[in-house]
Image (cartoon, rainbow, N blue to C red; front, top):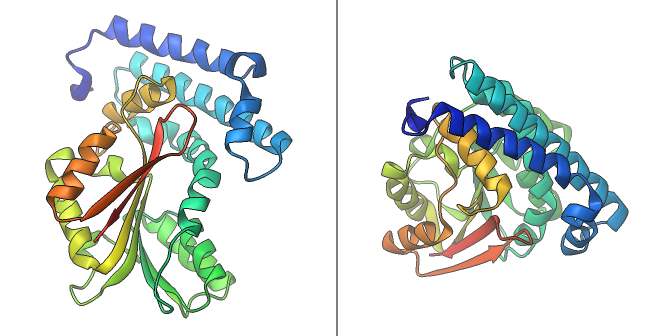
Length: 277
């Protein structure tokens, strides 16, 4: 709770209550124009996408309700542990937005990919499944997801082309080089004070001509971003969504020669920043 100690408890409760009500309204197709979102995310049928978005709003409501309970408890428990399942499920709503960004990757014939904060490695598995000569490394700090990811690699007959390791960037050998590095929905785990060191390490591990792809919620007035910003501020080891302009500036300062920012949602609350070495 110390990260929000400057805000009155009453104001935080009011903010959360407003968020719950807003997301309840958001489930109504006529209020949030879910069909418009479905056309924007036109990677599957409109009916299926509307259903997925409604499920995302339901999960968002659940996260808001968890945040309210956490505030009433005085922040005694780790919010991420309580709201984690809903947060994880809701984050998969961006999967269809991320896919075309990854499909646009142009790598050497025997390209190598590093997925930082890989989770279950769903995206890395998908990319390697489509490119039989590429290989990859997944990296995560959660032992349970590392085990799951390695099992998925085995089930998909990809263990000979990928491995998933427990640790951080410092556990990657200096001799290893990659043609692409992914950072999908993981920048919130990197403290702003050390973010440039993190980007510098990414830069060192990339081959010349390589690309770093960073996908994240960006600081904005969007209610979804406000929701997660509050949740992350209440959680140990997490920081609120950064401004995309700050990310681009820091990437350029550590030596990336070209960056491009692509909005992944109609309101621009989620973006992909692609930085080239």
